[in-house]
Length: 498
Ligand code: AMP
Ligand code: MG
Image 1 (cartoon, rainbow, N blue to C red):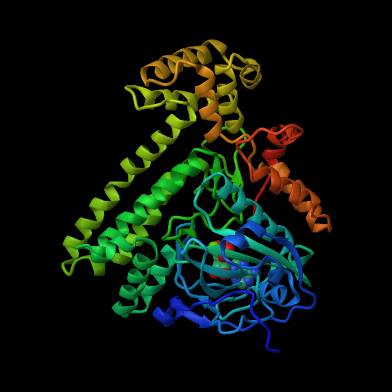
Image 2 (cartoon, rainbow, N blue to C red):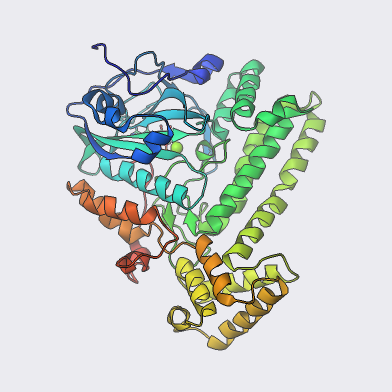
């Protein structure tokens, strides 16, 4: 390799130094014709990277996995995981490479990872590669989630490789560059336990504390504190999904980050018509990861994390189990508190009041019974407060209006009881700040990715632009606020690891 200047300043290898047992060396892949497809200029700047350098031939070579940044120590990370409830002792980065960590302009340490960058020693039968559609899909969802204010891994760039990737049919190959607060997962802990060397687990827990919950380092029970901190971060995260109609789709323990960021945008989707049982993933036949199951499955995943931490928490195993159970027992209340607070904001309620929880449940019941578009409903409620009942009437066109109006009466009474502004337009404006008008609806994403796969990235960039300002109504974008045509979502399916 020629001696070229890296567009990535000072990539550190803290993870490799702390936990060599959880890594395998990674080698660059051969890439026939790397080219930039999508670059996140703003994120590049936040990371302290020069967008022009990233677009130079050297930059594109790094981003395609064809060259290693000077001084970097790239690795495939090892992890295990429970997939649909079944334990896989050895998963790991089968098509990803951790290039290293950099410090962003805010002073935070950030992982820089390639996805689709070729085979690793964890690849098993896989080809280690990725294609344009799924990588742009991850770019779109990650940045849409970020714009919605939801913790997430980010997408820095997607480059094409110039090489066809064999899926159902040949597809254009691509590599995604992703950043994350870290890639430490519940599955990392499950893998560390397998090492049968307690020091690995201790070092992993210490690294997680150092990177994500540093205040715990000097606490009396740091590892119990770690479990509690991850519990809270995950409770907040899943609550933010539930408030926005997001279905992750593959909540295996290897896709649950210790930092509390959303990761893995393979089979995810936003729900249009409200239905707790909504599933889009082609392989989730039993609905394990259905919309309404996400809070309970997150507790299940946290329980897997808790099991790994038991040896660190108390030498007396019974005492450790009791402590851990106490923490897990607190999950439900934590989730509900977060969700209730979010629902209050969505409905313009300035404070908690007696009976507001029943109000939330009744609303969801109404939406479910009448299969109302979840996202539009909250914008329509705000419009109704502004004396524009038409959007709400349209959404409830086939509904029992008496039932709906009883709920509206209860809501307005709650607004008064909560001390929300008597000026209803002000309340409505506040609601619009937290209820998106534009989300990554399945038919829009599908349309943009199909075009990109046939070489036209214009619709992708247009949709991305819309999703980067999800709360601001803009003229000419009416189409992007509409739910899918009626039968679209009935047959729509999403896929893992393509
Ligand atoms: P995911 O469904 O992306 O969470 O991946 C689950 C596991 O399968 C991880 O260990 C991935 O690295 C691995 N994997 C997914 N796709 C591929 C691929 N094309 N080649 C090798 N490994 C893969
Ligand atoms: Mg994954």
